[in-house]
Image (cartoon, rainbow, N blue to C red):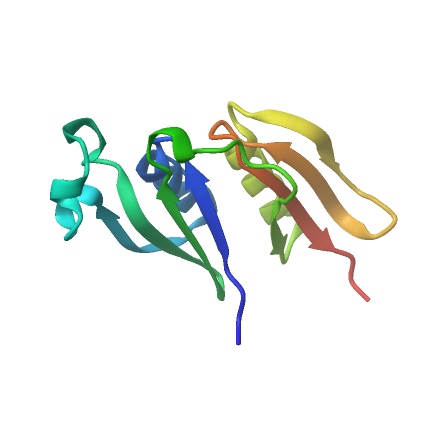
Amino acid sequence: MRANAYLNFNGNCEQAFRFYAEATGATIDQMMSFENSPMADQMPPEARKMIIHASMRVGDTVIMASDAPGERYQKPQGFSVSLVVDSTAEAERIFAALSSGGAVSMPLQQTFFAARFGMFTDKFGIPWMINCEQEA
């Protein structure tokens, strides 16, 4: 068994996933629009370019996502996507890239539990935590 995060976007899933892939070095495994699915004729023309399903491999984890059609979109709350990285340099690079254009709620810094830890909401409205654990 495994658990994966599934993110919903307000029409900008493709843009967000391409941004995440560039910032983290992740690989986008799948990205399908409504227009390329069996549901194409059930969607209004303005929604057909929206993403029905996307998946991305970040290290050994998969993050999945889609665009929430119309009134189904809700602002993300009550969770954060947490990335655990291996070095302080990697933490600083990824934090700077992903938080660009977003809102930092806790600057990346050394804490009692981490060599580097910080939190932000990215420019797409997704909350993140970046953690570089201290060496044992």
